[in-house]
Image (cartoon, rainbow, N blue to C red):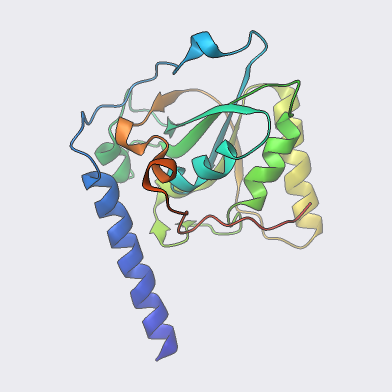
Length: 203
């Protein structure tokens, strides 16, 4: 009985999540891949790309991290140019819900961001994240160079040594498209907390 109740609750959360994302605002449904506030960024700004389920929750935790200048929710890794949220939700675009993290390398490091990535979602879940099921919600790190790849692989190896069955994939970065405006800074605007992203100290 308890198990059936839990499954029912998770199913309802998934339905509510998808519905809320689609209906939060009646704003232009097209995404774009233009930078936000790039004129305010320091010359040494660096970018990192992470996917850990619903980008609302991923964005929430990175925005709280020291040295992070901005976080933008979007779509990455797929073949569809400038996809909409509705298109990504079909699972046919190849895109994952992803965040682009702009950070100051003098105040934080890529390694610290990778740690936070793993400590704020269930990297062992293979079919999505929490109640959000689908290929667009998979766990992934998109690396832009050999150094980033080596750091990501190092932490996956460390987790496996701790007997975690890591589902996170490490992929070469190829594209990123910003999500619709109503997805940006979602929890900051709502004044609420993520429903499936929680901080757990691991490293």
